Image (cartoon, rainbow, N blue to C red; front, side):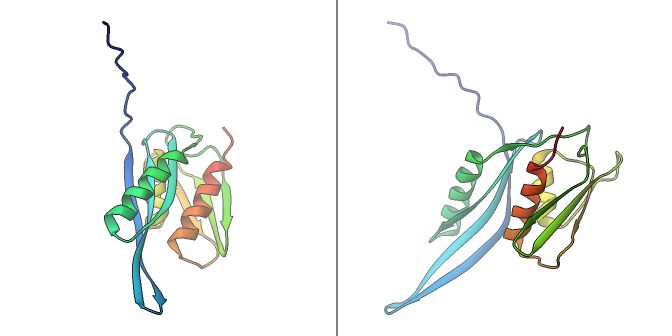
Amino acid sequence: MKEAVDKTKEEAFIERIIFINRVTKVTKGGKNLGFSALVVVGDGQEKVGYALGKANEVADAIRKGIKRAKKNLIHVKKKGTTIPHQTKGQFGAVQVLFKPASQGTGVIASSAIRALCECAGIKDVLTKILKKSTNPVNVVKAAFQALESLKG
């Protein structure tokens, strides 16, 4: 009898933990402690995704975030090592501006946007947070929206 072997290639993903938040819920019986982890996942070429994992333990929250981020991958259009054109993304009180940069410039960005760009394979880009909210969750959501709106 012949065995059917499933040879699906497991892609190597870059996983970056951006922010871990400790949250408590006060109940009649006391305080319930929990954690939320903001995670960015990408293949370093053109796919990137993010997610917020929540659990009672830090490791579980990170694992959940990574699993959910792999399901929400998008294809980022690039022109060489940078983005094809200038774009803006907005979420909540955060507005993020992305500008293409010449080769060798590097990623000029905050830590949250830098992790997103590294996972997407963008090596040269200029970014600026225009509205002064530095909440990492909203910054990543706005940057993700800006990367989604890129046209090749």
